Image 1 (cartoon, rainbow, N blue to C red):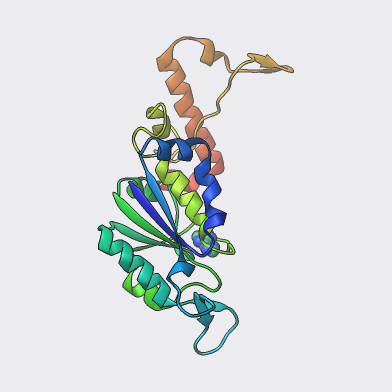
Image 2 (image 1 turned 135 degrees about the vertical axis):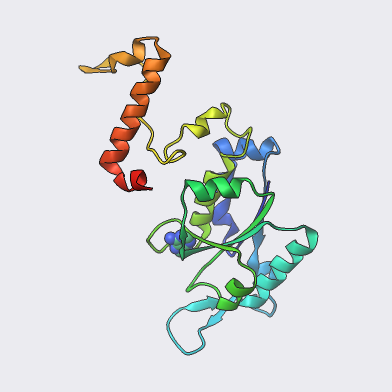
Length: 225
Ligand code: ADE
């Protein structure tokens, strides 16, 4: 998979890709991530990527020309399956969107800034608009990092034990059950006996019951789906 990220703040985005699972995925050649500084596609002395809003109103709007140049250059080099715009008014990111995106070959992620982008960018180029939650961030970069993390860990081979992504919370619309490690008892708090039974059928059944219980208590909306 190849991910091209268009941003005015590449330095804000790089560190999540320089550690742990994402770093290893890149080093193993399972994913390529390329950052494109939108300013490199701007013209004029100030390399300006934004301008004031037609009709008046506070806040700057990202202009179409540099974005067009950057996306068009990338599209000349390869076909893209999805051009995603990170925006608080997009559809809310969930595991299903992460799963779908992880199956794509080439994607572009455009990070918004200021008030957002000129509507014509969305009309012409964007195939999917994603929000990471009902709150407004200063820009789309952190959202793009969240999306990339959720997607990249699903690419086959990225996680050491491939089944571990399948047992994540949300993968089957259930939250994950409680988990424990050593010691067996800590300050009077004991690990549930069933986990020492050696009976894997019984342990699986317990985990499933706990997953339902937790989902029912915390996120009953997931069970309605
Ligand atoms: N840009 C600003 N706020 C955002 C959000 N909640 N999700 C994605 N991109 C954003």
